[in-house]
Image (cartoon, rainbow, N blue to C red; front, side, top):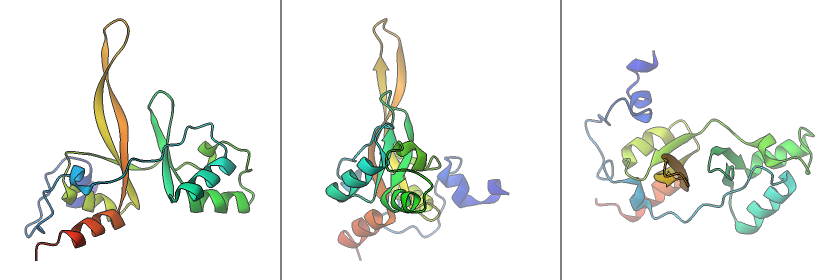
Amino acid sequence: SKFVNDKWMIKNGFLNDAQEHKPWWWNIKVQKLNLSAPLILLPEVSCQKAIEILQEKGYDQAPVVAESGLILGMVTLSNTLSSVLAGNVEFSDPVTKVTYDQFSKIGLDDSLGKLSCILENDHFAIIVHEQVQFSGNGSSSMKQMVFGVVTAMDLLTFVSRNDKK
């Protein structure tokens, strides 16, 4: 039944945002949010080090990205702390043991309307930018780079600061 759900269709790129009475910000591109560069963790970072880094830098979450650039998921401060306190992981375990591998991605050229649909079900979205990467033999491939992490609070802050009403 997902195929008859417009929000699911928009989120997954099968339908253009078809809202009849769109707010003024609906078609503005995600790149206009003016987000700061993300904090990225490598998969071998320990849970203890991840907690320290997130607290020191003032972040609630961070993408976990392999050296190859593959996005493995998101780690949150609250989930890492609760997993350690519950005894499910050790401080010395790699952060990948507490990484959420279910996450939504959105591009810089996607609309805030599409982002809004994603954030109705997800706590965050990872903003990605596609880049062509060439190897030594001249072959090329597309690589996704993490450009940022966006939450409903980021969208709300943008809308309230730029309200056109």
